[in-house]
View (tube, rainbow, N blue to C red):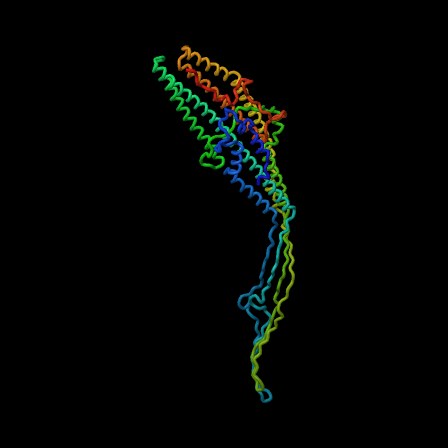
Length: 510
């Protein structure tokens, strides 16, 4: 079934995010693929394509389209007819025409007496006198109706296949977005748990300093409040992760998530191809391919409606059996010589003949004008919709391209300015707290700020990948430029920590 589908759609989605690499071996990877319960994007997409309820249901629509093509190829059935005429019940239409005679005589010393009834030919009763015709009729389609009917059904089958491609691309793209959501929330949860660990360790360290009389008990209360707030935040993030995993598992119809984590890395950002290059490939869009298939359906229907205006010929060939007229006589005669009862019937049987008939409707009033006009209008509408679909795809490309560039600049700013500043501020707060220049709240605020900008970077990376999925779904192919699909890792050289740097130690020297 998938043989009629455009494999570029799946290829595009499989290479949507080369930065979502599997088992990269970095310390910063959210999960390692060594665990059997860790899900990769390739495995997730394979399950979605095989088990997604919407895709499995739509397969029956493809089967129905193929059945419509089969039906369109069939010719009209012949018609077998049996016709009985002049079928008389009882004594016929007007009764038998009988002539009666009675005689009595004496001649030459003899005796002669008799009664006779003579029936004139009036046709026998029942089936014996009926005219019976057995014929076979066949409708001969003219005007190329069958060929045009098959062409229209084949075009509809192609449209259904394109609709399946669009649905398949939508489902797979949405599954990739759900996978990215899980990956992003897992990264947020890792940061949240790291902050909670630091606060818990800091609380224990400050408790020892309070017992030693080095700091005020108020410091311990403050950090306990912050630790409890962070615990609540960690629980909320864990709930978000569970919901994201359920949303991903729903794509293959699972009621529960049967994986413990997803494998991938959001840190890699690839170059965005120029907008003019993307627009040059707009005809690869699944939406435009579906529109083109629908336009062919409407054109095929116009040709079919015009062919239906040509009358069909009905040819009939048969055998007709006709009964011949019959007469008769009956009576009795008694004489001195003999006594006789007589009954005679003249019946020459039946005669058979061939019957040939040709029927042709006269297209005087109904020449299918309305249906032809309707099909032509629908074809013009489909042609006009093509321009609208093209404009929507181009506008979507421009919007997504601009948003991708904006998020890329945001990531550059985070990597080159914001995160280094937050890291330096945290180090300064640690030293200042050790030297007694800052309070515990100042240190906690610096730690929270550093964790927040890291989570902000994760959110921006996830948004970039979501936008890229939408863009490549729109054009039905990877968006890499002519220079190739080279991964542009944001690493230490440009001020952005690698994925391995997403778990910076937030602890401080006590």
